[in-house]
Length: 403
Image (cartoon, helix red, strand yellow):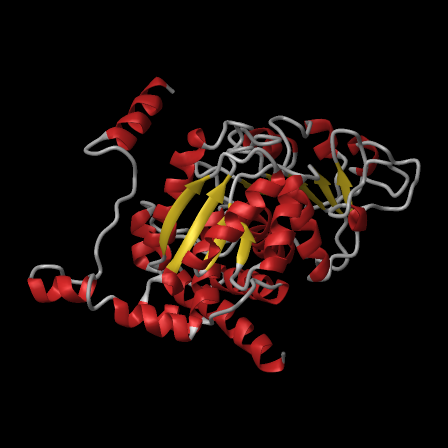
């Protein structure tokens, strides 16, 4: 751990602090260049954009520029670290946008005294950008922030902690269930964790055909008798019954999806799940149950975690660069449910195809094929850009055509 700490700090400090820089996309080597880049030539595109706002996509970087914005209230698994401390994460997000999808990013960390102030800040700076990626914002105010921004802005607004996670979980689960001989429509699914990620995952799975989902949080099972339900989890509550705890609902469960805390799933509860269970233990950095513990208890289990050192990492990097790439290419005004479902289907399908040699080389593997240890593509699979972005753009254009 000490070695990791030093390497991480050195990585961020040298040879220059941070992970981002700005580079010019146009030459500026002569007086003629300068006269076009700035005065007097720059006045020409200014007038064109003033005449027609759509021209901003022709004459500026708006169409390939995303804001990664946070208030720092839910940074990774660290909690409320504040806006400034979240900056390394936002810079890292920007690196992934650029590396995987060629999208430019400004990371913006906002010290906002209230939810209203945060919303107004984003609305006021939105004209600069082609899309808004909300990041590391705590529930429940993340729901209100995203909903209000989606209603007020004419560019895609996407809370990755919610929907990016949901897309990857949906893709991975569809393949996991297939391998275990089960279907989404008939599987009994239990969620532990009903925050931003849990609610969004459950909602997307319901849209894709899941019919039996039980949500459990720190208080217990989300049922309709609870007075603490809100607009973003009320539709996920089940009818009141004698089942009030995780232990009450785990017997016979086909799927456990944890977006909660380390070691929250005991081996005893794993034992009472149905035959050939699927367990997604996604708490970071330590999962709800370690794969070594789970496999010692059940030899018929299929597992995924959020970590790169175990098979089947549920990693948002498989989603958000390509989802935004497709949305920007289609000039979509929103990222819709249909676009997210298209991304999930594209990811699931790609995992069933032969793995290219360069991917094997990147992970120092001799072979890799669709199966219990490979249910979603690897982040360095170069096919993701065309497949996922293409599917998202196609879904966006189809909705634009029928709108």
